Length: 134
Image (tube, rainbow, N blue to C red; front, side, top):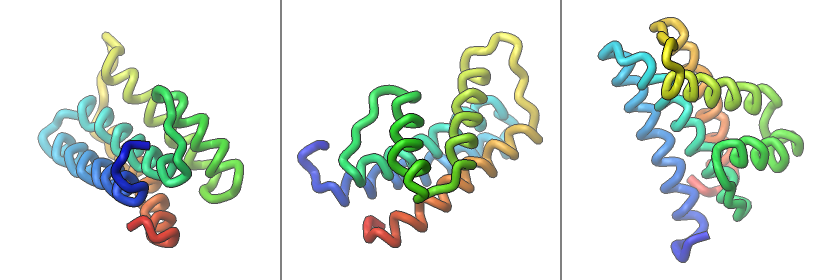
């Protein structure tokens, strides 16, 4: 962890999640579906990192975030297994939208990804509040 306090680090990371989710929604309204889907993943990614930071876990890479989250939060029953599945789907969709040469995101699919991200973020927000990080 950086020298800033643990609570402050967790809060800042979660703020990134909320800000990125707002950007994803704005991109959706303007018709930038692939970019919106990518931002939806990053919103959930930052929320999950906030959880990991709360336990002083610093993941390496995107898959590391998923693995540590599953080990320390999902497997322990803090969050439902659905959260791991949604995070993986968001990551895979982000990879397709960022790197897939033939990928064409639709409004409907992007709206679903935003709902997935919101579900993760809302659940994490409740937990962070309960644990006095927010």
